[in-house]
Structure formats: structure tokens, C-alpha cells
Length: 113
Image (cartoon, rainbow, N blue to C red; front, side, top):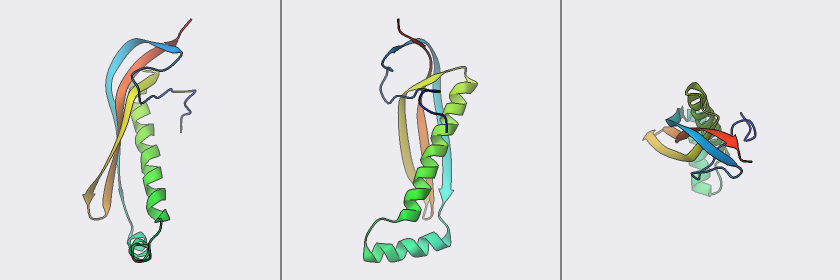
């Protein structure tokens, strides 16, 4: 995963200490993950007993990281070196599939004097 120092990302419309010199446009990264039958059985039991379902937490963390990476790759393809107004969205596609979307605005930034 690219670190914030290598490729700044902000949920706001600016990045402190930098000025936006060019807007490259809308970028996104999407992934869809399916839960395996084993995970569903374990989740079903955990649902009856209560508590965190660690298999799903791991799956969603991996999905989030992958969608952000794909969003960064998309921004780099456009010649950007940062993303502003980053947002995340997630939705069920079917009973055992989940999509995770990262999106924002690709920009070129420079350090402020």
C-alpha cells in the first residue's frame, strides 16, 4: 500500500501545507468480495452468540485497502499526485457478495512556500 507521504489522500477538499495546481478529475477504485461457505457458517454461529465476526472484519479491511489502492492507481494514470474529497462506499450485491468503492478527485499538488 502506498503511504500517505508518497501519495497524499484527504477526505477534505484541501491538503494542509499544499496547494492544488491542477485538477485531473474523478477517480475510483472498486472491489467485490464473496464470503466463503466456511465464513458464512462461522458468522452464522457468531450471529447467534453475539460478538465481532473477525472473518468479515478482515474481508472488509482487505476490500477497503484494495479499493483505495485501485483509486490511487487510477489517479496516477491521470498524472495526479494526490486525491482530495476521498469517500468510501459499500453495499451488498447478493447474499454473500459485498462491493467496496473508494472515490475522489485526482489532483496535482505542490508544497506551499
